[in-house]
Length: 400
Image (cartoon, rainbow, N blue to C red; front, top):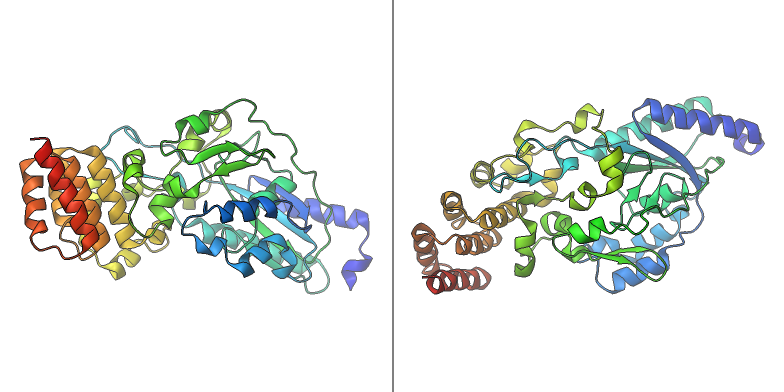
């Protein structure tokens, strides 16, 4: 193979050219690491065993765990990995998140789906390598699209350290970036891993998390999150009912959460707006009115939802998931103006939506809300929804 006779100097030059190409495509950081076995699988196994992954079963599948531990199970002849960072930070519009009647959507989801954006750029880099390196270069590109530990690879490639919020933080960029990885069967010289923990004594993210999802560092210094309490998990990955004790902490965040990044001093100082046009917020997703977005979704079926949100990260929640979240946000607002939309949601075909609409109407102590709850109580046949109706009506009666 030609790769076996390439000199060390040639490999170093090729690596530098590859990283410069990556930066030229709009990536803000680029580094290279080897394909050594993961050093974090013991922690990972323990984290999963404790159930911290919630309903994300794809994180615990035997085959997926094995691939996370050994990159060569994904690309048999893998020798190195190019790891890149693509910034997505955008500024909140005026009034967001402070105005409770406005829906807050995580910054990364206000524009186009990042998977396609980052993957396309990684494929350009692979095509370039195939043009200049003799032989058939083999590569696999990933960005949250397969069972590999992107953050560990990024740390090993020198891109940053693991913050207490579990995010990868770069000392000059903060943490608002996607991580992409390009597995290669080329032996490229690795960068120096990022060994420092620069969080120091700061606990801003732990203190700010409204649902207590961040648990600090374990005895080995690894940051720990209980995903089951994370707003991003609750509003995106969870398919069933949101636990009652966590609903108030969600506030008006209807898809994802940025709180632990917003309060991070490294982001306050170094995060800058993205230059990627695809990530620019779409007007209808940039702090929309909760009532209007709820009404819009109620008028759609699942097929219509998929069509409207084609190319958007919001498709992952599906129609009933996003409506569930909107009901919670409307309930947290608790204003009489939220009632008409919630009354409509109380008759939705989805029992999950009706369940959360009932809870939300229980937070709005108005005669209209009470009448709607009482009327639905007479015809509702799903036990979970009936329980929410009973509790909401009981709350109204107790408050007089």
